[in-house]
Length: 165
Image (cartoon, rainbow, N blue to C red):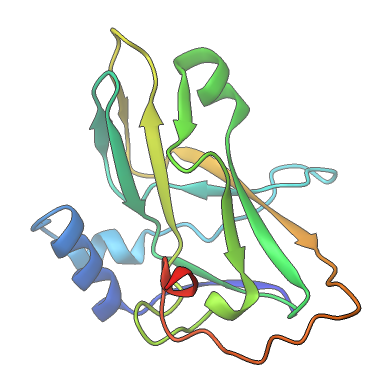
């Protein structure tokens, strides 16, 4: 099963307040979160939209809460990529180069599997502004394989960075 969902309003408020600060009408912002969808019949990617307006100054980065989590098959991951138009026209890139959302990230204890997108404005002179609802990235489902001698038995304990401990 593959399915995008919103995280809980409680979790969204918690992440917004700790990463961005107080936002008036947080419930309205939450209610307007756009569930990722493909735009055309043969599109590979599901478009992610920013739930809030924000600006990126030259050479500045931001970790953007999307309000979205994703459920998928256990042998799949979601590859998160910058929209090509943002990279080509405005020099926007992902801070971590490539975004990988593992299947066991969904509903984890620390953040419900909240997908955060780390953006970086690589332009040395020009800033860029985004409006709530702007498409910023796309997610593509990918199947992966494991080696014949793979014997990992541990399970995810938390959210972002938890498997590197």
